[in-house]
Length: 421
Figure 1 (cartoon, rainbow, N blue to C red):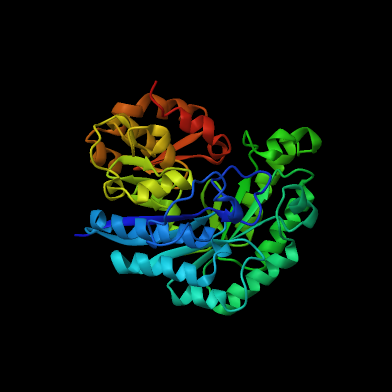
Figure 2 (cartoon, helix red, strand yellow):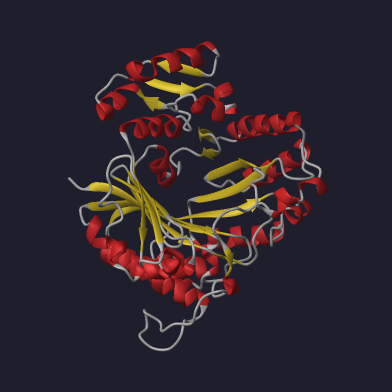
């Protein structure tokens, strides 16, 4: 029986980095800054090509070279994220997808998602995406209020979003996610409700509704004193609006921040929350296969060295349980690359099973826990489960263990209780 695998493909390019973003992304013209000139290991002649072409060649080479390791898997989902994948010309997206399909067993009904930002696709491109197998798109709207978009540094307005949405619908996409955000600077419950109403009126199949987090090192975090943010009470009202209004429109909440119409839960993200095997390709991409986690180098120069080395073919080999390995590409670390790789201990696997699984509204299965770890869940977490039940944060329904609505509201606290000291 073939094992299941999901693939994440990271495209780091964007037009302009948003003020709140702490993802590994940058404007395309910046990738060669600080790089030494060298012969292109990919073309065999000339110097480094243009940014996107150079990166796509590296990416396709990594995808191709890694395939032998995953020949016993069939791929159930693929996710092109970033950055802004739709910033790439459609022919580059096609090349990437061709590299995957040529070397991996992609299931006939695999979910294949591509992220896009409003205003970054042209007429005819969505049709090309469909031709190469992409069957789901995720559009980053964030807000239907142009002033709110301006405050967080988005490059588009609501009109540009509507044009993008219309293009993908006319092309034939029948599985569309829209990202929205609450707790934005200058936002209140009334303006957030207007965003909810405008988005649901379009009837997307899936809505991801995130609350803004001010990450250290981002411009918005550094300049937060210049903005007026919603109060804690206003944030709670926005959370209530999200749950109640989306439910009234036929969207069921299946994860802390994700809502779907019937049959449209995101299969790829559920692989993460349910600890399935996935491999990440591209700059800084993370992987988890057979309880080994590793991440690719996060600078273009070190990523190029990694791709052209033998190590790219053996991501989850060679580590011992509980060990964090730093693999240096050369004797001089500053001249090579570093690959972080860790084999998860049994306790770490248990922790992840609980705090990732409890992100989902359905929670976790006690029987599956016992099957995986050969130990009843009560023998490991009985005290924690009883404590959270008494606090009204968790319920036990037969085999299922899940957070209550109140528990989902304080999920960080509730899930942290499952971490071992």
